[in-house]
Image 1: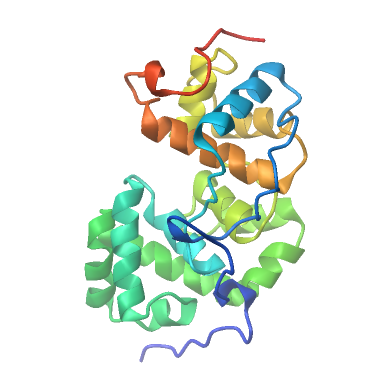
Image 2 (image 1 turned 90 degrees about the vertical axis):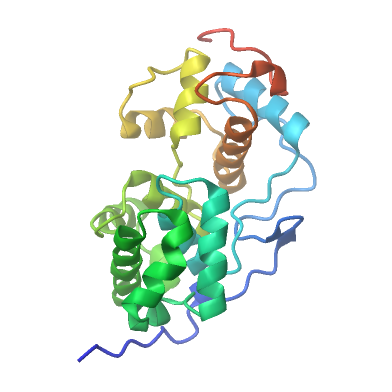
Length: 253
């Protein structure tokens, strides 16, 4: 017999976000009235972020209707483009499978079919179930926000299918914690500027950024969003620097 799961009472992770952009609702820290005068203590990184912001503007990221949808999207974006994630999330919304209890109670075939656009749908269906079960047992978004950050991160990394990038995305955008997100774009941009080795371990890159970014939740979110935008626009495996509003890489500084 399938267990009966109930959502946490008044879990803030299931509350609709009041924020919106041209993409639609988003979850994150509202942007300031104007960009900060300084983004990072590292001169080169600070200049890069200032130039990316000047060219791309406020990103208002992560696209989602609720913090729990951020968690769903963080899993679904593994090994696929965000456009595919949007299709899978739209399917989940249509079926009403956007709360942890409903994910766990879903028919397996129906859930896997909904996730098909995101690829690896069999594994991702299991990952969403594992994350949903953990989320309910852990205490929901309140626990993610209130418990010591490194403890929560370690616990989240213990969930099957949750790696460092997924965990940091959930903590940073859904829970509003200063947990730096490192993805393929981050690695590529930093290494092309000569500041890190391209094959540096994830935690080395995360620490490098955490020690240099200004201590601001909004900057923690926005730097990642700007890097995603820059990577999507032109910083691909074959660089198209002419499409980037930032200066050409100059090497270490």
